[in-house]
Image (tube, rainbow, N blue to C red; front, side, top):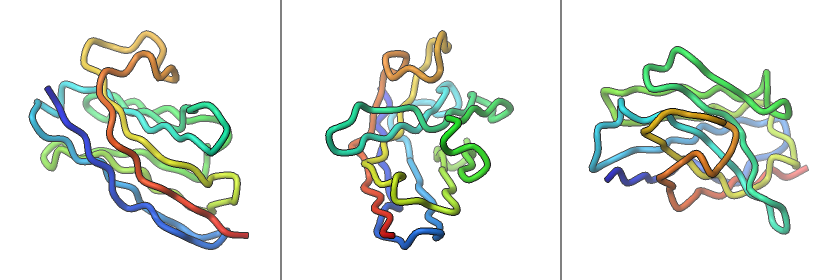
Length: 125
């Protein structure tokens, strides 16, 4: 069973950048499709980005398209989320998630079996 741990969150000014990392242990990382989700206070968890097992397919929420980039390094058991041009509305707890049986709806949190604890991203205006 894979375990996921996020890092890289922090406080940044609007227009700045952060790179989140999520490292997996206890499983064969390359078997998992991976996703990033976020949850702001008082709001539901929402899809941010997803990447297929081999990295050949990536998907983004409209709100982050063109600003965020998801990537993975299977040799390092790590998935990344490069976030540029951050906005105050990007403030949230960011989670990585993995699923091993094949997506039906990559944007749905219910498709994912494994979750990290989250890393906080705060963007000041």
